[in-house]
Length: 293
Image (cartoon, rainbow, N blue to C red; front, top):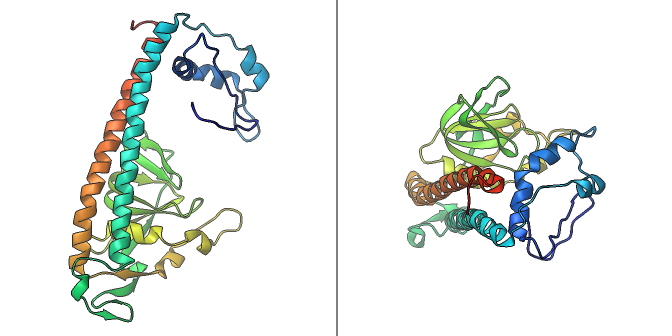
């Protein structure tokens, strides 16, 4: 839903409610019956369902007529989405703060104590370039088809694909796409699974994972693509990357600062998960009339 000026292509059915209907209510009602559209959408050779304009226009729905009630329902549900949006904006701010700190310390070299630090060959004394193979143990992901559903995230190159019942690793890790979106470097701390198109890595150095995440994110992985049809990365290519490794005290200090931001981000993501569950439980009860407003 959008309340701003927008364009849509031929793959979008745009619906503009008349003045007798509340726009928020119509939006959430369509979300409520989206399984119906999925059922009539069929599929194409690419596996995508299609609800064309003719089919969409012929659909008849039993909608609440009282606009005052529509507005109350729309206001209740939109309050949940507004809270989610606010939390997402706060998450973006935290992400930007952490990235700015990385740039300040390790790109501009304005880390704590930089005023008195000695530099050799353009880098602080005591820092050195090392091959990635000496810094991270890069491991292959595995097929997830035999996993049962659970609460452990399963990562593909595009992000979380599903949730399974077993973990491939538990701890801090930098996730590196092996095929597909090669630049989509991710960081995760906790139990997780990566599919066979993803690498995950285990740091050899204390307090290194978050620093490695930001450092690898600055590399254009696509430029090292080894695949013909599908973009691909190999362990051999990764092993030859050289990363600048700060001294242990600076690494520990950086990890301490950004860990606070990461924990705040994680707390907001958990809040959003709870709000989404509450909204999705409330939606069918409000739309079906089981819960009066």
